[in-house]
Length: 148
Image (cartoon, rainbow, N blue to C red; front, side, top):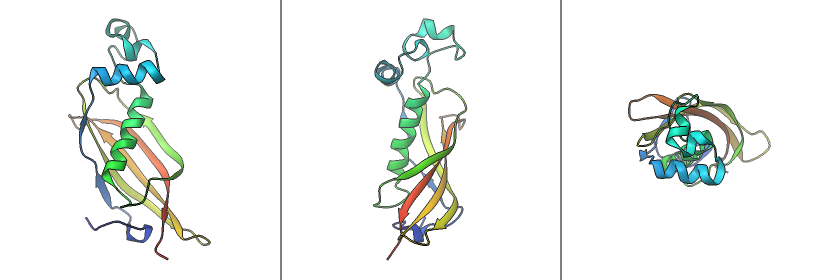
């Protein structure tokens, strides 16, 4: 893959892959206790009685993990990931304790600004578990500087 530093370096179809991260039961419970304190994220027995049929990470925890992995993938080189919104956010299957997750991104569209030294890139990110099952997708509307 070519070194990406500016909007101008991106091409439709370009792909990015993050490192892998393992999610522990403690990670799931710690996030849930602070941000989403519901039984399916905090208690094994209570979680069995929910739609998830067992302990599962909060969707917002999954989203936060995906954001961290996207940053590690460095799709825009040294530039921060700045967005104007998110399209296509979907949780497809639960993230469970001991899941190993990685993120794959693909550039879907590129729109240069007519008035500013930047462009808008849509990169569809898909997070997979260790079984290559899709667990989460999102497509941020990324604002990326252009060469001046």
